Image (cartoon, rainbow, N blue to C red; front, side, top):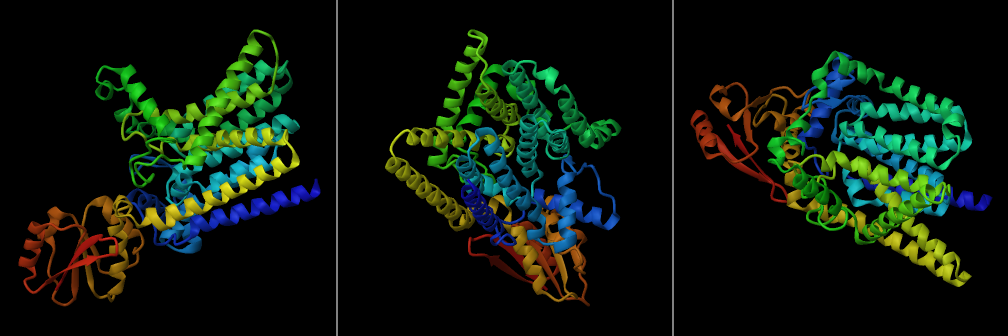
Length: 519
């Protein structure tokens, strides 16, 4: 038993190291910094300079503040650079990998299955994409995994500290991502399942459950107070894309719902998110092996749930396995709701990020099913099954690493989705002396990545395309004028203002282009 535990720790450590390597490799350069990421960095820099760390940042349609404050901490330690901007997402992602091991072991009771699930999550292409983007949505799986681990641990050990920690983590979810707001429904389903399965559950557990609830409310209270003071923060553009909006559903709510729900489901196995920032279109989010395991696992879970529910309601048979399947199915479908209750850009993997841990837990059920079948055979069969699974997992790790780092990041569609031209410009202007005027003609969002990574650069000026008439010639200083895209009318006006200027086209290895006028 001791040797097995040591082996499990060694394997888990290897998974963590490999997962970190996948997430940290070349993080400063690829895949780029999208303007929405840069807004988080801008808020973090402002918080550092003013000392005003906020619970909620209203810019960019409003965002819960915890992630931006973590970015500020990262900037304080590592400087203002793309890696420091993305590092909180990387660390949170890897803590989720670790949490997947502990939660899986708590739910399924087997170290080998927990290691498999943790590995699948660590090397998943879709998870890897999100863990290398500085989006606050990365915090949602982390919160759910660890909160539910401590909750199940508390129910098992009957220790109040586990309920208190789990509740506090759960309450922190209010500070992470708007999709968390549906998560309490999972806890309600879980409570109902325990009440159905265990006699006198509420009588025996009302005190620790109260501790969990109070801890959650304490952790969430700053956000509740912020919303009470600023009710406008509760509004979001979700009102404009909700399937319940008559403008969106065009009078056909049922049809709109079915279409949106169907698109949400097929993204895992058939047609994925078509946004290159979230996926490798048109391929599904999951590779064929994990996708097949997920399909088998969720079908198996559904069948077991209804069979156990029938046994409980008709035959009065109580079985704890009913709790497991009620929990997994409610987690998946409830956290899928932020996606299928909207009707813009579906399939939309980011809105359904909270369902990802459940997806891999379903996949783990399939591996558990196969290993249990193998254990009923001879020793040679069990050994061969274990070898096959190890080979499959190794291939998956190599496949997903290559898919991300050797293929996806080298696609021009990926570069365009991340507006890589902005980081190219950001790097280019550092080649010039401080006394050179760097004049950049671009929109408001596009200037943010350039600004935050060059926030101390002198003689850096930004103009909107409609403001070019106000660009002044400064004979005493050399100058360059940079355009993020080619516009003959604007270039013509600029060359009229600076008749001796030369137009240069700057193109990277993927063909991403910006234009420079030197005077």
